Image (cartoon, rainbow, N blue to C red; front, top):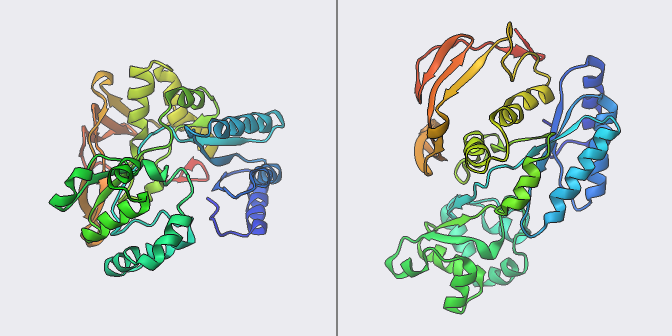
Length: 351
């Protein structure tokens, strides 16, 4: 995956090497203020390498339905030109839970980035500083996939009794109730509680009619887990189970065969993994056995299972009976058996 800070020349050179080797793929997120230039960058990579390119990400946004539609049309034009550019879709509507003790995803704004760095004490001092408030109001984070719509952020848990009446309110409603600016409501409450106030930013993709347009796009994979990033805020790794439950069992938008192709075979194809992602005689088999009617996702919980007893948010699944890797059961339900029957893949092949 190409990094955000990589020079264009380095990225193109990597594409050239992949083309010479005839293997591998590139995956990158590129979102500047010039969508046309961004698209041309992806197209040039695909032209140089001839290898699959994974475009990150294709997402619906309720207030801007033209955005994902334009991206899907562009992906279609690329395929018509023979460019192997695929999209990774945001098919989960997982939102973000956070406190200002560690929140750092308003960093598209200079004022907010400066105020949300440092120790908890330093953050509290800056967020409570009246001299900074005008800048924080004037540079409110732009609407994005990460930060949702500012005035729709919900106050979910207050530490002090005198603030409990705000729980369950959006910042817009809390501002109307208190006569304050949404920024003042949020920060006054958080600072008064030593930044322990918990907020929830709903996903910007709640409109299911728009989501179906994404689900119906055959060359878009499901996603996105976010690669384990933002583990204190987000549990988007639920998307495979969520997808089967919501789009197959509940809405019947697609068949089990179709969703397994999009969840497994298509990503394996894009990544160049041979004989993986589907069941075929003679091929290595990683098999998940589940009870379709019992599949589900449990509520968010906090676990301290990272080095240094650090914590993260997780959501667990229900309905899975067995995970079988190369003929051996590695999980019975959610219990690890200790079997290590997996095989290391190099260059898309078993080592």
